[in-house]
Amino acid sequence: MEIYLLRHAIAEDWRPGMADADRALTVEGKKRLRAVLRLARAAAVEPSLILSSPYVRARDTAAIAAEELHYRGTVIHTGVLTPDGNVEAVWTEIRTHLGESSVLLAGHEPLLGRMAGYLLGAPGVLVEMKKSALVRIDVNSFGPAPRGVLRWMLTPALAR
Image 1 (spheres, helix red, strand yellow):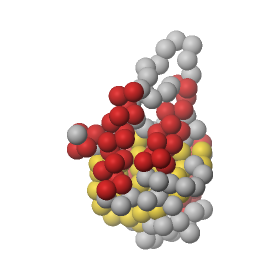
Image 2 (tube, rainbow, N blue to C red):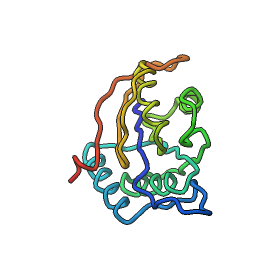
Image 3 (cartoon, rainbow, N blue to C red):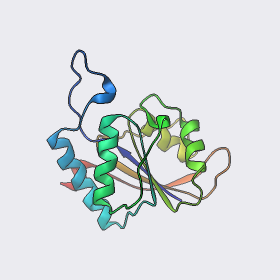
Image 4 (cartoon, one colour):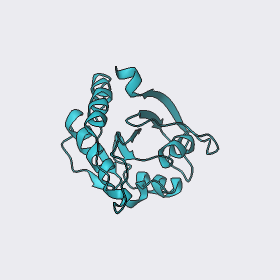
């Protein structure tokens, strides 16, 4: 299975009285995200399933990914992808979709950086996920702990 980790794009700053979960993407964030996703589409990224954090900035990131990558399914929002989520819970969620060929997870730091290390069989390793970064990790073993292979990472700086 190809697993894609997509960190949400740049979001508006938090303001007093605003819930963190309600922060929307900025115009610049959407622009950088689309540039990364166009490179991904050129690399033949075609998720068969998209899972997203329920936070507005991740949901909007997932919606843009669905559009740019020509995804025709329904984006599934799941609480396991919130910023303080647990990698084991995310792995359990992934394992419920074993029939999928490629799963894209739209979420947040620090979870996605920890998830990259976990999928690579090195839970102590942290991968810095810049906003709008997209990582591909291939996993062929679906036991209690994954052993994946890092294929590539795209960042907005590379997409310029």
